[in-house]
Every structure is written in C-alpha cells, then in structure tokens.
Image 1: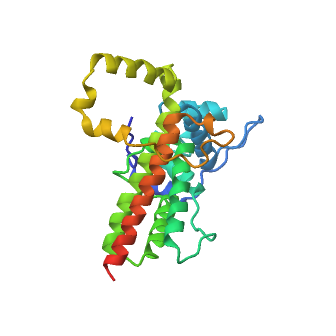
Image 2 (image 1 turned 90 degrees about the vertical axis):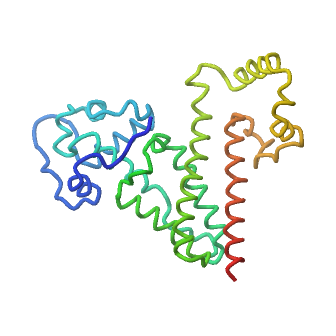
Image 3 (image 1 turned 45 degrees about the horizontal axis):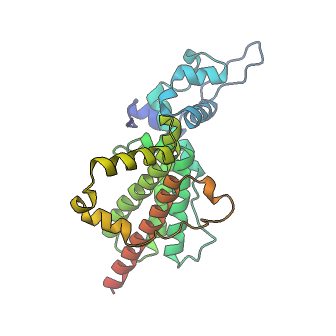
Length: 273
C-alpha cells in the first residue's frame, strides 16, 4: 500500500507542521481524561502505526487510544491526511542532525553512520516506507534530515549539481534496504510459514520441475556456485543466529552496496582533481 502525503488543505497542513498557529483552547470539564493536544494525537497515531501498521490508522482508532471520540480529535487535526503528514514529520525528529563522533573531514565515515541511522529508523517505523517520496511532507524535521545529508555530502567537495543527484541516490538506496529488512521480518508472520519451510518446499519443487535450471540460467547458477558469501558482521557470535537468514542477507547487501556507492563518490572526487 502506497500512501501519498500532502493531500490535506495546504495552508492548514503546513501551519500544523510548522506550529505557526496558536493551539486550540483546552476544554475544561469534569473527569480524569487527559488534555488533548496535537502532539498527544500524533504520538498516539505513531504508536498505533508502529504496532499495527498503516492499515490500522484511522481517526477513530487514534481516538480510542486516547479515550476520546474521533470527533474530539478534529478540533486539533482536520483529518487523516493532515495527521499522516504530522506523523511522518514527527518521527523524523529521531534522526541525528550531526555526527560529532566522526572527523569532519572523514565524509565516508559520516555518510556510513548516517546511512546506518536512517536504515534503523525505517526498520523501527516500517509504515514510513509506505509514504511515497513523490510528494514530500515539507515539515521541519524532514527538512532537517535533508539538510543533514547535504551538509555531510558537501564535505566531499563535489559540485552542487552532483550533490543533488547523490541525495536522490542515497535516500532511495537506504529506504530500499530498509524495506528488504522490514519485509524479511514480516514474511513469516504474514504467511504462516518460516523462511526455512518456504525455501525447502520451493527449492525441491523447482529442481524437480526444472531439471535444466542451471543450463537455462547459467549466470545465476554460476554466481551461486562461485564461492561463499562474505559473512555478515557478527555472524557466528552469540545471538547472531537469532537474526533470520533473509534479514542477514538484506543487511549484508546494504553494507556492500553502500560501500560501492561510497567508492563511486570517491572516484568522482578523484576524477575532478
């Protein structure tokens, strides 16, 4: 399911994202119910999406979490479209905006740290991956994340035109890697069969039904036979086997792919000197 942000009223959505309007007045009254606020509604919505997925998100479901009716929420947030924008921007506040532990001149280490943080962020909030990048939310935390990446890339010394394209390369790469990890975690629960069961059944059937597989697809078969895959960092350590094989593969693919991308950036730097 792909969701497009920015479908609510532009002015109202942006005023909520940037908190330029005064908050609605708090309604007094009897009873122990906690006071509502935009932040409380957004936090409840994020918790719901984290636990149950984007499909469970509705104004009624969020209201139930807060012990209120859906109608009570509309005083603060006009609708689900605006709420989604607020949720998306709010969780991006988790991302670091600086990497002081890295040498400012060591752009490679900083970008490696950035990519790792962004990967784990999306794994924590897999519903964010369903929000299309075709139309940005245009919120402050989303912009802070973009500004951080641009700052790190400027240390490479490459010209602005190249940096713009690198932003458009790195974000989709990390999101795609996070999607692979998230899907690997979801597959067993969603299908009712473990990865081992799935592969055992289909591998046996494939070999039986397509005995000339290796001859028909020599490049794929040759790649599998050419040697062992580089071990995932930490593989063999205590607890490593608790990570399912597809997730370990996805994380190793991310590590190797990121290294190749950073090698390309280094080659571009060398080529301009």
